[in-house]
Image 1: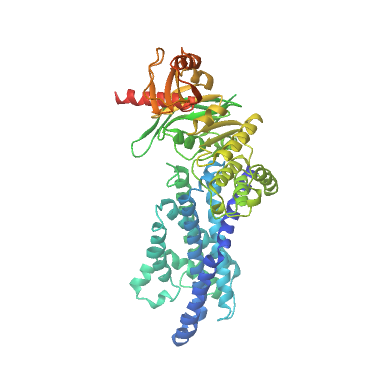
Image 2: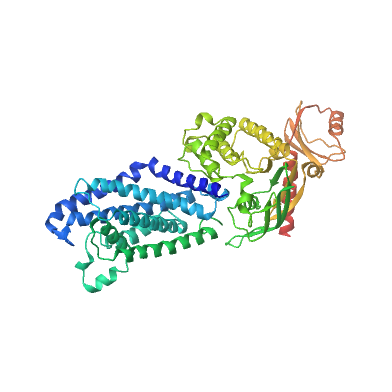
Length: 256
Length: 310
């Protein structure tokens, strides 16, 4: 039976990967172009006037955050649009009718989201080589944080899709929650620049932990202790994972 | 063995609509079973619960003696379902849809590809295997859903209006195909609004109306309940007025060359033709006004309406 579930998991994951690679012009190219523009404008043009941030060139400071932003956005978007699309056109029923446990459905969708997030992250990293030298302080932390973050936001995207009743519902959270948190999550600046009170407020933003631990992996410097950051990410993953499983078991949004 | 065993199945939607009011139903292995009912009677809800798409409120469902609650992996493995509405990703290639479905059932890719080729060829879709599903015609999409439902070789196949919107030629070829897989041992449950289809293929039938099973019997016994049949007669000569016949009361003149007559069980068509000939009325051709099952179905379901209205 485990073999049966393994095949089902591979099928869902493969189906998810095929979905976004089939429309790569819509899924891979735009984030890469957008980040390239960030590098040109903020990294190269404005960055030269900014000088150093946290003891490094601004473009070197910026690079890990922009890669992380791509991972976050794409992991989330992939799952929210794919799962809601499956609900909307009812092909989610293909899995519901089949003997596929909720856990396998969950892992399949999350894996698809992670593959897209990491793929775009790699593409953005390659683009960054046009603007800055490639150096990694701790590859293990870079890989671990990238995987954990993409997993977390794929789970968040799934919860959004489960509750969504219209296409508007799948854009509200990314626009009004995810984007502000990402922009205020230390991608463009070190929180040390902020007044004390806003530094404390920023610590309540989970994306700050991801961006900083990722930056630590690349540059060896961070506003947050990397171990604390990884523990925070793991905590959020376990919460969202449990919520997702409960929602799927209840059939929220997918079974009447 | 029972292919399907439903006990006291109830479903009340969040809106308060009670779609199923505690139905019991048994379908034997190897049967070709019709589940009929007017729109909104509860057929699709019942099928939705069996397939795992709708949560039941109460009752139990067993597929080949496996509970859909406690043994859902085993129960679902034995079930194939063709829903009423298209529920595949229309942007995926035809072949991929079937292969992926096999994967959900744990069929390895190599085996799935071979089986997909077999079913797509059998259902006349092989030349469209690389086409996106949205480019297929309505009939092709229906056949695609049948291929998808059969890919894991289910022992019980449920078809919810599989021939809706399909032209008559294609419908007949689908009937032949379904009879063939039934002959090979697959139990089939069919819902349809084409009652000719149910009468031709199904051995047993249940009629569901307003959430209750109002008939559950063999097709032969059900049709025996029909105590009259309405036929349309085409006449050779111009008919000025409705003829008065001693043994037949319900005669309607449709136009100058045709009449509709209700023939009660105790009389034969020969009696009618003899009476018409006695009045120099010559019958050239005749046909059933509607299919026999359809006539009975309308009587049974409208009877329920009257009862509930009372």
